[in-house]
Amino acid sequence: QPAAMGSGGLALLLALALATCVSPCELSGLWRNNQESLMEISAVRDDGGFQGKYLTRVSLAGGCIRVSPLKGAQHDLGEVAWPTFGFTVRWERFSNATAVFVGQCFVDAGGKETLATTWLLREAVGSLEEDWKATR
Image 1 (cartoon, one colour):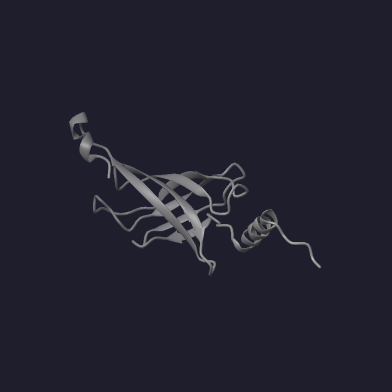
Image 2 (cartoon, rainbow, N blue to C red; image 1 turned 60 degrees about the vertical axis):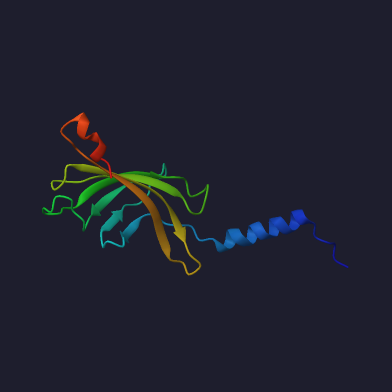
């Protein structure tokens, strides 16, 4: 008769099953958001750093929109399958603003990768009295 598996063995078995079912999220590549903006992230370096390009479809100034550089970092994929990350976009030639994004990469059961992010946009203002309206 087989030996009974204790709760520790069951927990280990579940952890192994989950580890084999969770696909890691690959941050590098081409991404499109719900506003049809595009972001391309180059290969993530061993230290977690990355760079890329962001083409927004949304403009505060209404001028000609250009590709803008981005730089960021993500946590080590060896720590978790779905890493947290952050990056900064310096809007080029059409806006006097900088945006920062923080988020996490997720993979659903079907293998679809999704970036869940929160962002802040900071515009330059002419005085400290106008500071209240500079961050969105």
